[in-house]
Image (cartoon, rainbow, N blue to C red; front, side, top):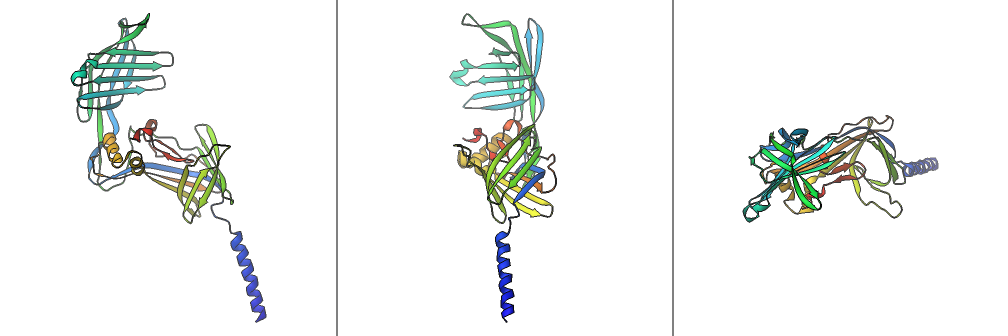
Length: 348
C-alpha cells in the first residue's frame, strides 16, 4: 500500500511540473504562407448596383496658338448638389500628369457664379483654364460634356488676364456600368472603384512566452518591424504595439485563430457598417452605400471586411494573395499590424 501511495505522489509531482511548464502553442516564430482578404456586401433584395466600372471618357485637349499640345483622358466622375445646384468633378491621372475638370452650376440668384475649370499638373508645370459657357447632360448612370472651351488664366502686374491664344477643349461621355447582385448572397465587391492593394511580400510573427513579441512586414521594398504585447484565449489572439519612449499606440489588432498540423490560421472580421454608424450616426452606412453604389435604402443587410492569413513554423514566407480592393484608399486602409482605419470622409 505504501508503494502505491509513493508512486502516485511521484506521478502527481511530475504531472504538476508538466502542467506548469506547458508552452502556449502560439509561442514561436510564424512565417506567412498565404494572405487573402476581401470586402463583401449582402442585400435582402436583388438589384443592380454600380461598382465604379465605366465606359468612355471625358477628353481634355490643351491648345496653344492653334496647335494641340497635350491630350488627357478623364475617367473618374463625382456628381453632387441639391436645391437646384449641380457640381460635377471629372478627373484622371497617370505617372506623368494629374488632370481635373469641374463644373459649378448654381440655381436661382446664384447662377451668376456659374463656371467651369480645368487644371492640369505635370512634373514640370501647372496650368489653370476657366470658362463660363459649359453644357452637359446627366442621366441616371451617364454624363455627357458637350465641347467646352476654357481659357488660360494669367496674372500680369497683379491683374487677371484670360489668354485667348492658349485654351483647353473638354468633351466626351462616360457611362457607369451596373452589376446585378442577388438577394441573400455574399457578394465580393470588385471593380474600378477598388484598385487591388499589394499584400505583404514577407510577414513574420514572433510570439514570446512572456506576452511580448514582434511583427516584421516587408512591402513595396521596405521592411517595418514593431514590438507588440499579445494576449490569447482558446480561440482569439490580440495585440497592441509596445510603447516607444513617450509615444504609445493603443490600437488593438484582434484575430480568431486555429492551429493545425499545417500551421497557424489567423482570421479577422470587421463590420464596416458598425464603424460608419458609430462615426456618423445611425443610418450613415445606408447613406454611404446608396451614394457610392446605388444600393436601395433599407435593402443593405451587411457590409464587412474579412481577412485570412496562413502561417507555417517551418516554411519560409512567400508572395501572398490579396483580394482587398481599395482604389486610392477610397475605403480606408488595412494594416496587418494595426487593423482597419476608415477614411475620414465617412465621419459625417
